[in-house]
Each structure stands twice: as structure tokens, then as C-alpha cells.
Length: 591
Image (tube, rainbow, N blue to C red; front, top):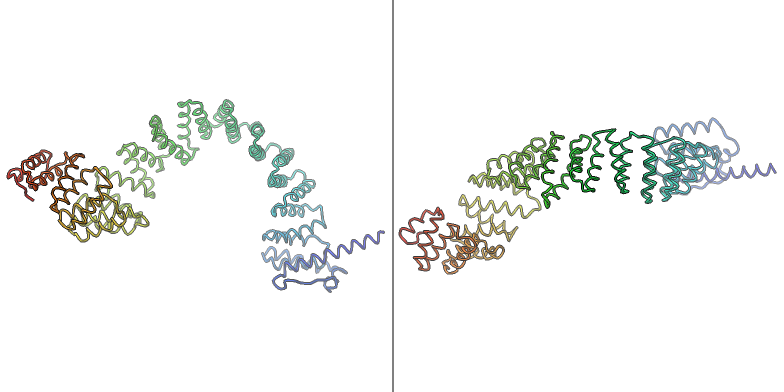
């Protein structure tokens, strides 16, 4: 019987050798031959079965290790294959081959070789570890569980294997089994923060808040001065509606670290939820003053205040107080000054906004929107030289930003420096990408600038291009039409544009006056009178220009006394017309 059993064992050994050799040739030499054929009659195999040359085996084995270290996996695998040819009962070359395949991501091949090695040596922990890890990587989680359990039988207190076993359970959505693994590990390594946090996370995922709290309470018990543990426990109490316990825990935090920003934030939320606004704000201020809380978190809080105070101004004074605290805590950072500028500008405090934006640019010149905001403010304040200087300075830093050229251009227009305006606008329009409205604004301003220097051809072309991009821009429709009427040219085009303009924006007296003046220049005085009367009715009666135009239209309709009355009224309103006095004195129309 013993002889028969040994013969069977020897036959099994021979068959395993043949399979491994066959598969190793399939894998390693696939490039040379896709379907190699091996049989027990192969002379090399026969030689290996009959006698093993230890020197030859060792040479191949150490060659394999050498090539593996050098990173030549192909030669390493060839050497280990030769080892297996010589002695298929030795698991080490199989293990080394499995490692190479595992590290190169060929997991199926790695699994074959490591399973073969483990069949030969079932108690080698390194073999079993690679087997378990391979199972985990290829998603065979139940087999990974079995393998890691076997490893823990070999070495019960191994920390890494406990975590890997727990991971396998978690991948199978068996959170409670994972917790049992962590509990078992705790017996060997004692209290450990990662274990408490992992178990807390699992309990929270399965909806067991009391158990989650119990785990963090154990953590706090083991480390009563651990800030992270105390803060996490406070948050859990807060989530569970245990506000008194949360406050008590946070007080412990502040005893350990009187400047703990996280505790300040949670206490602020707690008191806000309890409608204790003053206490809530006090802790918010402390959080903002803390250097531990990063500035971006504080900025996000202020942005929520920005939304709130847009509707409810009761928090506005607190908001400005927080901004000042933020400035003091971060005096070298541009962000507090930027958001201060945003708040002041929104609230109509233009000077304060300008001051804060200037400081922001001084601290950080790399943010173009702040430069743009400064240009807008300076233009609103009619500080045209300031606009120009800001525009030119920002162009040095941001040469492809079109709005810097636009603002500089229109500021030059206001200073009547028309050539400089034209240069800025023509340069800036080349920078506009995929923004028809902005490009239309450039052409509109170019129309104004060219008209001012009596370059009417380029002026008209610029206005037309602007309207091609934005056909309903009432500013362009009105200005272009008015200049055409003054030149008494293209009056039908002007009439067409003003007809559209007054439809888009009705009851606008300056537009109605322009429309009337187009009729006037076409000598259609009755229509001119109709639109002038509409303009007067809609508020134009306070405009010296509109009133004087009304007098002119009346005179053309032979209503001389009424015309004189309107000219006198226009003079009283401050008319700057060079002919107004002569019209009144001679009671006649001069144009």
C-alpha cells in the first residue's frame, strides 16, 4: 500500500510539473510560439524527472533573481521556468514568477503560479499573503476572506492582514463582519484611533448612530485630550440632536486648545440653531480671528452672508465686523480686501469699495477682475485719468484682456483725446473672442470717436458693424441717427433706426427728441411736432434742447408766438445754443 501511494504521489508530481511547464511556455514564450506542445517524453522534462542537478537549479534560480532585480522580467521568467523544469516540486520559482506577474498587472497568470506554490507549501505566510492579495485585487473577495483568515491562523496579531480582511468584507457589503475583524485586532494592539474611526464610519453607513457614538466615546476615553476625537464626538452628538452633550464636549475641546477653530464653528452653528444669535456671532468672530482656520473657509462663510444680506440687511453690521476681523487675521492676503470691496460696492459705498480694491491689487496684482472693478468705479466717479492709468497698468499684466482697452478708450473719449481713444479701441477689439455684445460696444465707441474728429466714413462703418452684432442697441440707434440728422444725410436710414429705437424703449424723451429731429430734417414738421410733444410729456419739458427743438418745429408750422414762448423757456432752462438769444430777439428761426 505504501508503495502504491508513493507511486500515485509521484505521478501527481509529474502531472503538475507538466501543466506548469506547459503554461509557463504559453505565457513566457507566447511571442515566439502561440501554441507550444509539451509532453512527458520531452528529453529535458525526462531529465528533470529522473535527476535534479542542484548546481544547475541554483544557477537558474539566482539568474532569475538577478534579472528580476535588474527589471528584465522576460529573462527572469525564463530562468524561473527552467527551475520549474528541473524541479516541479519546489514552490519558490513559482512564487517569484507570481510576484513578477502580479507587479506587472497580469493577475490571472500571477494567480495560477501562486495557487500552484500554495498547493506545495500551504503554511508559507509569504505565499499565502500573495495569494490573498491577488484574490482581493481580482475581486474574488470570498476567497480573499478565506486566505486572510488562514494567514491570521499563522500570525493572529498581524495588523495589516486584519485590515485587508476587513476590506474584503467591506467589498462584499458585510460591514458587521468587518467590525468584528477590527474588534479582534483591538485585542492585540489596544486602543487605536483608526479602528474607532473605521468602525464609526461603518456604523454611520448602516444607520446605527448610537454604536457610532459609542466608538468615538471609546476613542475619547482612551485619549481624553485628543482634539480630533473630541470634535468628532461633538459633531456626532450634534447630528443626533444631543446638543447639551455637544456643547459639553466642545467646552472640553476649548480647555485643551482655547483657539480651536473647529470648536468655534460648531458652537456658532449650535447657538444659531437655538436662536441665540449673539452667542453664535461671538463664536463666529473667534473662528475668523483664529489662525488655525484657513482663509478660504472664512471666505465661504462671508459669501453666504453676502447672499443673506442682499435680502436682509439686519446682519450687515455683523458682516462688516467679520470682514474687519478677517483683515486683522490675514493682513497680507488680498482676499479680505477683495470681499470688502464687493460688499461696499454692492451697498453703494463707492469710496470704501475703491479703497479696499486698491489694497487688494497692491497685495495681489494677479487677479484681473479686481483691476476691472477699479476701472468701473473710477469711471463711475468720472475719474477718467485714473481709469486710463489703471487700464494701461493692467495691459502690462494682462495684454489680452479686452475690457482694459475699452475702459481706457472711453475714458480718453471723455477727455476728448480722440486719437488715443481710437488707438485703444482698435487694439482692444482685436482681443475680443466669442463675445458679440462686447465687440458691439467697441464699435459703438469707435463710431463716437470717429464722429468727433469728423471722420464720418469710419464713424458710419463702425456704427453699422455695431448694429450687425447687436441690432437692438438703443444707444447706437439713437446716437447714429442723431449724428446723421445733424449732417442731414441718410435720413431714411436714420428714420428706420429711430422707429425701431422708440419701439424697443418707449417713453424715453431723448430718443423721442432724436426721432422728431430726423422728421424735422426731412422737413416733415407735423410728425416732428408729434414726437416732440411726446418727449415733453415724458419728462423732456425740463430739457433746454428738447424745448428749443419744440420751438423750432412750431416756427416751421407758422406758429411764431408759440415758438417764441418755447425759446424763452429754453433759455430759462439754461440753453447753451449759440443762436437762442438771436432767435428770441428777432423772433425768427436761425439754423
